[in-house]
Length: 251
Image (cartoon, rainbow, N blue to C red):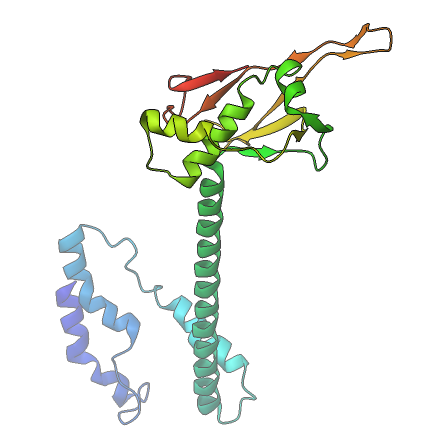
């Protein structure tokens, strides 16, 4: 192959002598002939000529010559072809920039959405009705009928903890007991909904409903609705993500 190529170069002047090539304007440095100079090296290096053939430039010839020529009015076509190719290159660059910006924005929004979903999914959401089930329930009724015998003391502890978060021990208990509750009745909700994050990250939240209400009687003191107090497990902050270890049962 090298000998054949050398033989061609020794005798290529015949093309100029016969007028097939113009000695001033034409030359022999065109792609298909140039490729032949690399064939021996490629065969020795890769052992094959796959994907290295004289048709490799045909696609570029269509894109950069044929399509460009068709876009001209065939007068002074070289200048028009250069201008057309320059404009198409600018359009392609702009199109690539727009596509990149869209991909970046889409990726940013996806990350923001996933982050928001993970952030909102870490905590259990609590849902209450807009209006309470019963209004102005006295603290005495709350203790006798609802079984909330420690409501007042728990409320005092809650207020005391928020007043002095660092307090502890017997002194704190005495301080809580001295807190005066400025009301004698409260509004009560009989139902509460919990929207808890699922263990499976791709699954929707788990919805749970807890009911708590005393028995209802008619005028004859007959039960028309039995009492219901669902049991829930309260996570005071020491519980694990799964299981009930560290939780406190509340009736």
